[in-house]
Length: 407
Ligand SMILES: [Ca+2]
Ligand SMILES: [Ca+2]
Ligand SMILES: [Ca+2]
Ligand SMILES: [Ca+2]
Image (tube, rainbow, N blue to C red; front, side):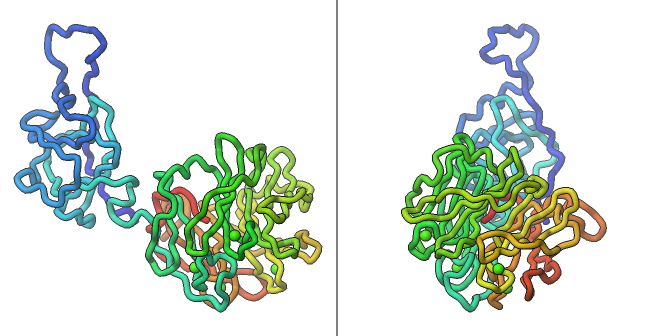
């Protein structure tokens, strides 16, 4: 649930005559004093429309002191989101407004002054909670199994936030920064299995601008080492690039992907030297009808990793079991409908602690609660059951909003 209140502050754009060479003979621009706010500062005025006395800060202010409940208009000339709280000490529950950076001349104005503290953050969700999502997992029987990057038997999640940072959440509700920025340049993040041969799970990412595929070796602690080139170019012609686990049975993890032009499903076997071997066709067509793939690990219990795929037209979730010939067997229905209300399918192995892989999902706007749509950012978990299907949904909490991607 979003805790912030939109307070009905009108964002007004002042006249931007500066530098245009025009001479205004009749009256000065109404918002001229908003330009008095220097770049890098948040400025507030005692009056509406940037009239009266100006106050400014470039740092967090837990208590506005003499300016408490005195700011009637303001402009954010920092590069960060300014969280404007109705209460002191950044307490979000009384209401807050996340103000994006303004361009020169813009300002917001209201007759009612309610701001009592101000904090600057990179992403909107940090006005009320950590940058990373709250993630719990139970210890699994096997260490460093599918989804466990740091070998503590708990299933881990990697999250990309909207500022392009990566966070590692080990399953005890804590989180830690593992990528300080730049990850928004990637349009695929996928993890699972070991591509370097050291037994530690690795991350694979596709660079949007170039179609390059990069391998980020896991260090065994949840962090990532220096990247290696995995695919020089051309990967932008593929959809649903999915690190899959070892389908070929040679002990090395493999990658699968759908060719956009044909709908064919290809297997790229992991090879020695942190490379991919020659690809093999494992699905001749029709895979463009799927709008999500999840490499689940071994859900059927035969030692081969298996695939979940979501059918776009029906919202059904299908299980394609991996076979001993490194192919996919006959599909079975896992979910009969409604799965298109999930923005993300996150396969992170066994988080329920019974040894079977489970599935975590995050909802989109079409997810219905109590008869109403409009519930994005809920974490819904499904425990794996014998045979490779899932138990029913468990709705945890709605605080996985305002994030970019998960793997
Ligand atoms: Ca772990
Ligand atoms: Ca590795
Ligand atoms: Ca299997
Ligand atoms: Ca489980």
